[in-house]
Image (cartoon, rainbow, N blue to C red; front, side, top):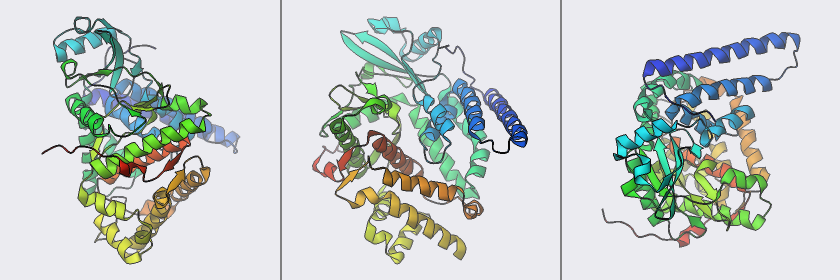
Length: 441
């Protein structure tokens, strides 16, 4: 794969790249509608493929938050056309890497030495390149190591990238009024955290310690002396990406074991730690030869305040969902309903969220749940399809809901998708038996 010697970092350069990408998409639409005149039965499949290709090609050279958006979109299997999901999913672990000179320059700047001075061996060619950084193999004192290096300029370009995205996102999701800024600020803050490898190092080491009691779950050891704000060194973990494993697995027992470990990991974080790994895509998990789950990336950790946690999970209880008075009260607590809503808006969003929550919380209402059963996911797809075509929802102000919904909902949608891919059967409350030692504040 061709390497990259330079990444556009200033706003003008990045905006110019996005404008060029937009122009290509425009040409694709002109071509599509021209062919549609000749062939009225023409579907949008080829248009989606061409657009996905051009958008991905534009974003992958920018890297950073622009490419991170594509990665997040690739997880939305129920709302994105297949072509976009397939192409954008490449941003999880398959993008052009930095050139060797740029890698050496990064090491010299942030650790004061070149990689060959720090490790016994260091492979100049990366083995994994994603949205914010790339991974290299290294050896030191007989240990295999994974060294993650952040792309230059990523942290500095986040604010300008989001400024370019804001108008598009506001139109897509019909965000109106000043309140919408809280959502963009939440995304900006989390993306900035993901570029701070010193923070990721601390979060990773805490998560390894706190989740040690969960069986069939493994983590790498991290090395502070070989890490900095832009470089992170950990054990090299042997295994295949989760997406690769599920593509060939026929062992139901293995699927059940992995599914239980993944589910316990997330429920334990959410209910015990009140902080959660909020980036559950396949590129962040490996499977070893004993069918144990390996978690390898903790850059995106979402802390869950009680003011959100309590009403959020109270709405997961069937008796509350089906109690109109309590249900309405919780919707106000979670900022889904607002004091300035019209009666029509209040009725519309109450109905919408009642339908959604009645479906999405199904796994929590049972002792066991089979994620191999397609019925549940078929219903989710049907509901997504229904509201994507609903003309009324386009008239409603989409600026509603606590800012915490952004990453918590992303976490659960990503988790559900991974659980469905694995197709395992799990005990829903199995996580309750595991404990951790609380740190003194």
